[in-house]
Image 1 (cartoon, rainbow, N blue to C red):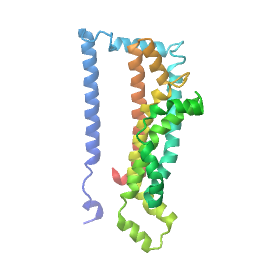
Image 2: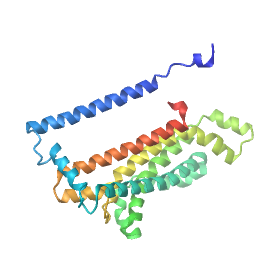
Image 3: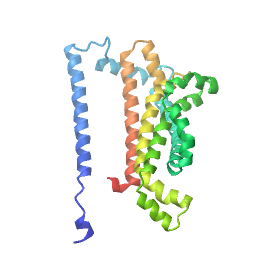
Image 4: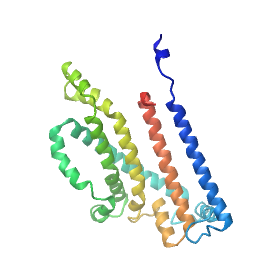
Length: 268
């Protein structure tokens, strides 16, 4: 029997397709129920927007004058830029620190207590210091996003390194692998699945912190739209901006999952 014939059929991709279909069906049912409840008068728009309220909000923000100081494209671009910059800084710091802590007991003993002390502090608590240190510009917003996204990247990388098969580590040592080669040939490849899990969580944390970050004197951004719409008591615009945050976050997460499949095809 050949190796190809011996491999079990791949049911995972079919299951993934079914999950997507079920999710889309559930979303369709929710949207249909929203329209039906609005048409029946159950939803009147006073507290929760009707489809017509959201449609009017979409027309306004995509119109010539925009809303909250900018057009929809300007708000989306600013939010995506901040999220990606904060996420990039978090990944470029959290993953190396997690690798260092996971590979070295001394580094873990040195960094671990400090991280455990700072970890419970919510990102919103850093807003006063962010303003004091960095002002009201984009740097302060990126800092807040970094605070939220750093921990998931570090923790999952650390766990991934600690869960690498000890047999592989011992085999590498027997064959003369030193620190650098051990890191890049054994520890990093072995921990990649957990690293990508941390990246997804970090990206989601970046989006959930976006609104708070854009409260720091933002001129444009979806967070700015949400804050202005709340002051204007404009439920249609609030829901419209929330839908864009959810859509962009889902698209970025899906792109990261696609990259994971390309780099780690055996996990499909």
